[in-house]
Image (cartoon, rainbow, N blue to C red; front, side, top):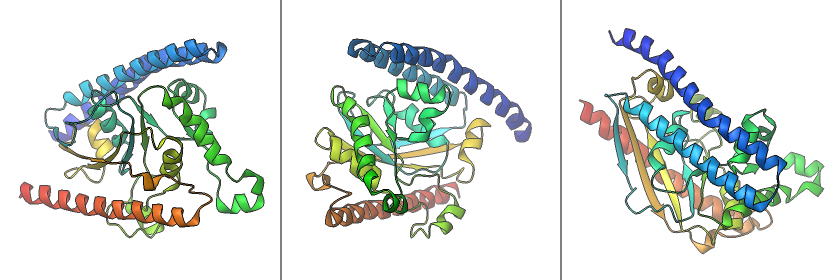
Length: 302
């Protein structure tokens, strides 16, 4: 019976999700064309407000779709003191495509609309790139160490790209989201990266270090978010679509943005080392929390 229900739920969920995404993205793309044709500050501000509203509608639609699953339980801690009038830097572990859905749904009424750091190449993807640009998503251009050795004139350009992307957020409250692992966690990737953590990939510090160097004094708090799917750890996104997802655990830890985290990550080796040590310690704490959550819910299940 459960297999039959999943077989019916999966295509229906996919169809409804696609329909919702199309209905919300078409107005955003059209607004992006207006923004492209009329590069005036007053028009750009109006387009940004409209696009944020359409993204909010998309988040509400996703929440409605998840509500159709009567088996799904949410365990969320740490939303009480959040405010839509503040600036936040949100960092999170990345386990599944479901993570983006979860972050959009739980934070939609608590903090400014999420802005995700995207790879610069995505800006050129038809329709998607324009929609993300209209939504003011910051695009990052990262250069490898070997590339910079061959092209030293490019040194610092990635920082400047991040700076230009983030400057627009000074005028209105914003939440910038960074999945600092850079990729979704899998046991294979854990082995390939020689990760010292049980549930996480090694964190990449450059992105948030650059963001803090540009907007550090602007951020009211650092949102340290830990996601866990203790009963659907292997395929949470598939289980979400097929109605088999039973529990989502979200732990939100509100941290002060220490002035010591502001510095020149590229040019100051001492600061770079301290920043990496701080992030690695935070990641070790997060890994232990996920272990605790998994054990807690496993024991409760027995």
